[in-house]
Image 1: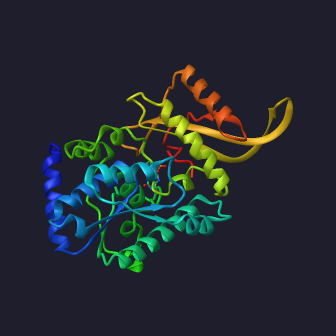
Image 2 (image 1 turned 90 degrees about the vertical axis):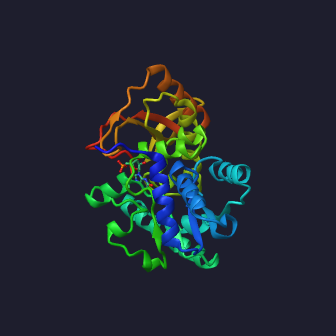
Image 3 (image 1 turned 180 degrees about the vertical axis):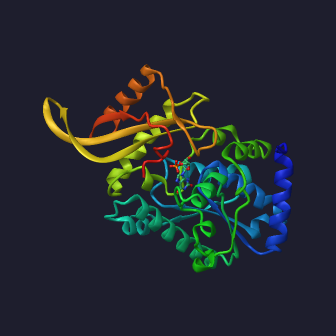
Length: 316
Ligand code: XMP
């Protein structure tokens, strides 16, 4: 197998984007994660007039992690002296997802609202190309019919032109490990390399059942707890999921009905298959205790020991 050389990869993609864009304005879809930061670096390097030609945009869907938008804005300000564009589109996402319980429908609706908004953004900035950080596992799973990832359009039979979009995806042929290698050569700070992978549709697929502001807030707090407790380099993805069930529990000596949170932590080579992480018992006890104490209304915490296959990594 050919040795992967991150520096060569970057200069190849920079060249490719430069000749594709031919001076046209580029919008980079930023999510706060490593894939989109690498995309921004590639776009930045492909351009002579970065300030005028490259627009980084984060959509605040209300489905992102605690402080993710704020931290990313600060990063752009500090590192590049660039104002990250932020669109608060929480209302349109929450109203479109209202009452939807099927995972597939959630993903389809998320995709539709996301790309309609991106089409609108492209027009409003007079940009012509959207750069986004789709990675290889997203494409493979979509092509194999395992799961249509929200950010995979062509391979899912959807023409980006339907949304008025021309899309450039520089990371399409990379595994997540290779994205990390590229990020290192681009001097993306280690704190981003250590971030837990977070799917594009965010908490929309970390909740089974209906998506409401209240339920999202619960999973947001639980996610911050789980992520702050995970440090082993063996853990490749770890997160909690808010389940649809409401079950009896005890609160102040009274029987109450509360929520169930499942914790999924996996080890994987390629995200196409995975096995449950054998988390030390004291650690899972600590996480459980914190979730029960700090997330309002949760009365039960479960640990998921399902491999992939048959279980997907995400629940929804
Ligand atoms: P699954 O659940 O398909 O997850 O076993 C495999 C990897 O892909 C991530 N994932 C997504 N990422 N959009 C994304 O950007 C999606 O729609 C999506 N669905 C799953 C998941 O977090 C895991 O890393």
